[in-house]
Image 1 (cartoon, rainbow, N blue to C red):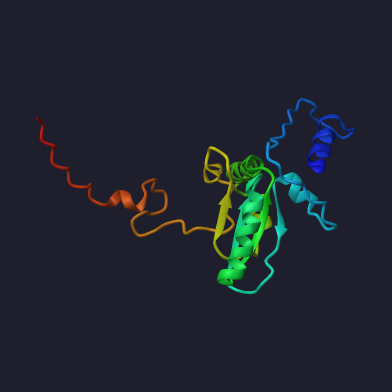
Image 2 (cartoon, rainbow, N blue to C red):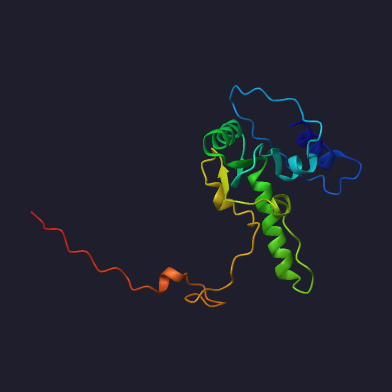
Length: 189
């Protein structure tokens, strides 16, 4: 947390601050969780920009990525242990310090690419961090809104079209199916 606070103070009041009209906030949980000591090789940039590798997998095996924030981080570490011991699954645990920051960065990268199509597209930070990470990605959070709604740009490209959804079409493949048959009216008494 200290790195995030230091970054906020520097951005608001530091000598290189170009915009002092900032609002910085922290969400701190009311949970009795002991904060571990800072690792010697902490990815400080990842902490500040929204995601860093907290616990690399300790075994070889089928791979997965677990992204967790706040009070769900201990649950993710426990899941990593269970997956390794009971299922021989190799799981990396990533600490997400800001779903919102990742979303903002992803949307900003999309906007920059849209406004400057002649320039190479900037790669969102979450995509940079997860580059080379293999297997399914599971995001764990206790936020009321799903983390998936925050949509921080996926690490892999999706196909731009399918047989039922040609490029430029806004309809989904399922929208070309026939509508379901109407249900029979319920009897009234």
